[in-house]
Amino acid sequence: MKISEILKSNQVTLSFEVFPPKKAETFEAVRSAAKEISELQPSFISVTYGAGGSTAGYTAELATEIQNQNHVTVLPHLTCVGCSKEQVDAMIQNYQENDIHNIMVLRGDQPTSGPIHTDFAHANDLIAYIKERSDLCIGGACYPEGHVESYNKKEDLKYLKEKVEAGCDFLTTQMFFDNNIFYNFLYRAREAGITVPILAGIMPITNAKQLGRSVALSGTNVPERFKAIVDCFKDNPEAMKQAGIVYAADQIIDLIANGVTHIHVYSMNKPDVAQGILMNLSEILK
Ligand code: FAD
Image (cartoon, rainbow, N blue to C red; front, side, top):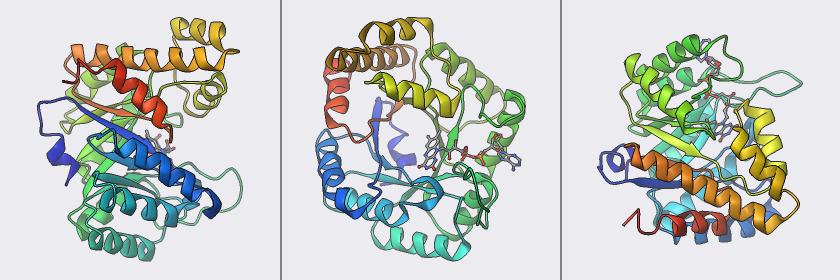
């Protein structure tokens, strides 16, 4: 099913994300995590694409399994970095043959060294290319706090609008830990004429290390309230996990209470975390 159809519902939609293995030896563990997450019956599952195209084959294989064996709508990701037109053509064909109707199109992060091989400089170039050649429903990324490389938020929003005009059917935000930042972004995006659905991306932080890495890469603001939680529980893994799940669930409850109906959880191959979030929302999602 196309995600654009799922998002037409007035009901809350909750989707999860998994990432493919880096090597064949760990495929089984990822497959099993994806199966458990599928059993929670999310609105859809996204499958990320490794940096520089490193997991291209596994992304497609895992997405196809989730769609055709677990019977959950999937959203495989694809990045411009390391991607040629021929590869995109083959991928579109493969997805269409496997009854996959959605794709998340990203630029990807630039490699820290060596030349970049790509036929597409920005996500909007690849989105336009796919839109012209297929009927896939296309998702794109957006950044409530501005993308780390952008000059300012206004410029970032201008490029975001171009990305939507190139053929994006919906957007998913980068993680944020302060909902007011999301509400402010939503207001600015709507005012700029961006009308497609915007899914709020929520990352449950269940260990302190994860917070360090995530923030370093994304430039996401961490509120004092959450810093205090991490400081207090960082040396107690089970308590940190519980606090991270509850913080994410609390963000989601606030979003729903403020009329945000589409939420994407960066569940990171952790069925227990995905389930913990759902348990905290059990009555709310009924
Ligand atoms: P773009 O939309 O191309 O934007 C990148 C930068 O260029 C921005 O600063 C923007 O303002 C600017 N820009 C955009 N268009 C133009 C233009 N035409 N001319 C000049 N400047 C322009 N990475 C992965 O490797 N694999 C994944 O699976 C993955 N999934 C993600 C999912 C989500 C929801 C998000 C938010 C990010 C994901 N990323 C993933 C990370 C993403 O690839 C990086 O954040 C990357 O740096 C930017 O990707 P983009 O698609 O937003 O790029």
